[in-house]
Length: 420
Ligand code: HAM
Image (tube, rainbow, N blue to C red; front, side, top):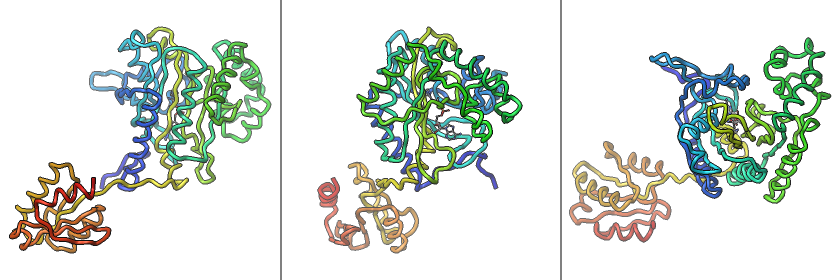
């Protein structure tokens, strides 16, 4: 027997309707905010992700890297942002618009330890607003993300927001943080020890109990903000109020990727049984990615949601999703003698855009009926010898059980009236 790859899963009947539901909501929300779709490749040259400034665990330890037959270094995308920026630069999109608002959704790959809500192949829906820096853009992006949650129907969700400040504020803060943590070096968990030189900001995010105790009294980014960054954050908050977004300020919020500065945010599931992977989405402003990848200095902000986790939250909150999988009619034929007549009717109905199916090989009435009902067919079109001889069909409404014999010519008129 062959098995699925560890950390991946199949989406089957019951779940696919939730995926379709989410995909409909993505279309709706992005249209409302005037974002256009972008589809970038799933694989990129490794240097799109592996950059000097990106020392996050996610990029250093969790990417799927391989060489193609031409000995080129490729990486399966672990996130959407860097690929979108690569495309923005390569297509010189900056020359055509001052604010490029795009969205994407699709599979991402990270070699992580699989658990509930954490997979090696997962899907993201993300938005990026690339072009200029303005707190109103930040507020609108956060508004979009929180509106999306509302649109889906999720109630137990919190939006947390923080600021990391501009480059100067960040540098001052990192110096203060390292100075504070260095005397505790031997007491820190192994992961945090390693991060102290490579990525000290991430120590704030440590789940280790002892690390958390040490961090409690650590300096906070907010105390090292430049006046400009303070104002930027306050302006963003004021716009969030105008947009009516509920949020919580979390001074400890740092993100898993290194490209952020200024405003960062996360959208968290606030559900008892959800488990530790409760970040439904997250994002923030990034100001160096475009020039690092070879483009002009450009500020941008974006976020992405993990669709797999949204699906877990939808299930947990028991949001009802109408299954619009149905047939208008199922054609039942008693024997192969009725096949030609039946196929003719099926063709005509499909030409008129009715959703129709039939059984290819079984002629036992009960089995055909079961298949019709399993497919949520609104009508049965029953054809036996009499119907063929009289150019008629028996039309049965599966809900009311009302049944009538009608001429073949009347069939389309009646269905048009009843269904449309
Ligand atoms: P991220 O926080 O790394 O940000 O991922 C965003 C979301 O993807 C997470 O909140 C989570 O819901 C989902 N996710 C991440 N890893 C996994 C996994 N292994 N299994 C299931 N879901 C997962 C980014 O990726 C940034 N690109 C967001 C962004 C866009 N920042 C600016 N623009």
